Length: 60
Image (cartoon, rainbow, N blue to C red):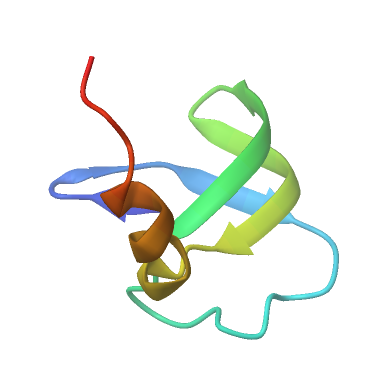
């Protein structure tokens, strides 16, 4: 997983999400040790699914 010039390795054993591909935005849950995330959950982030919900959020 990377963002800009930073990266971290992720291990995940399970079914790969349908939309998972190179350069996809992802949400990873798990534990982090020694620059490695041992993922228990891996999801692709689909912006179009959230755009409608985010339009109605008030700024605090």
